[in-house]
Length: 419
Image 1 (cartoon, rainbow, N blue to C red):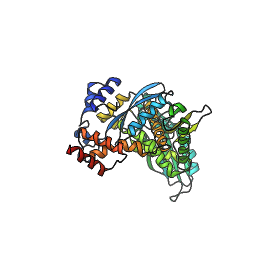
Image 2 (image 1 turned 60 degrees about the vertical axis):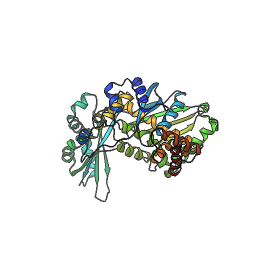
Image 3 (image 1 turned 135 degrees about the horizontal axis):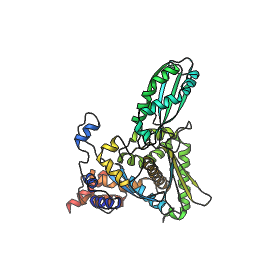
Image 4 (image 1 turned 120 degrees about the vertical axis):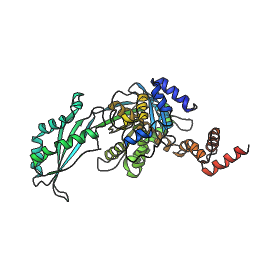
């Protein structure tokens, strides 16, 4: 794939994923999102903004092959994910699992002098509250979703007095669920005020979707990790040492988790989902124990294999929002060919785990810059003014010289043009 032109790559992807002509045309177009459609999506539209859309290869998840669309501006992300996926593929691929797609909506009650009594009054009205919530979305209920239960939390001493917070627990099926749960929260507010007293303030979803968890696991052998410069065991030790650093130090964990999101966010963006919500949930989940730490774990098993795992909230949808209105998002989902939001979430966390493996592998050996800067060289070449075939010539020389700088790119370009 790496040596093909974009149009040639698209043809191969289209053939492999069975894209129709309309989806092919959307992906090939420089104007996939017309301004008229963009104007209906957000306010004060003046144009559109594009990102490179690549496809990560080699992903074998639960025994099934996936081509993974990734919208990202950072060099090396797609290449790194694909390379690690190839190593994992040769060892059996990724295994994933997940919980039901349950989202939380929060209803804040203030002005109560008996917050614990209010809590029990709300719990006693559980059936009425659930019925009222589900009445707002009979279509969701028809498809097997809906409000499943409630929780009530008490904060007896805040600077604004006692606070009672009701959580609606809603199975949103294949939606991200924000609009659904927000509508339900607003609908049941009068019931909460009637049975508990006080006054309802906020009625809004939580992006800490800790009941909507996706998990991925990989296991690779020493042989699969070995290179000409490093033994497989040295690779394993380096990866585990790098992980332990992130596990104990929040300064390292922030960058460690950013590397995970380098893999996750591009899939979320490509499929038209809310990457800010995914980021917020991920980092809140990483701090759920009271201290910010790694979203992944890396261990050496008794079999002498490297085992990597990830577990995190993943509130993704296949229906609603930009997923339905953005033509490129629709085409990306056709490439990915997932049957449910749960499947999309599981593939996405597998990409995050692969990206983390790539970063730790590089950090534990030659350092992150060697491979990254070699791929970044094309950007530097373009910035220096290279066009057409000049881009690859300049980029190759920059990488070969291990001197990826704008000034050096300009020198090389000048030499080329002199003949």
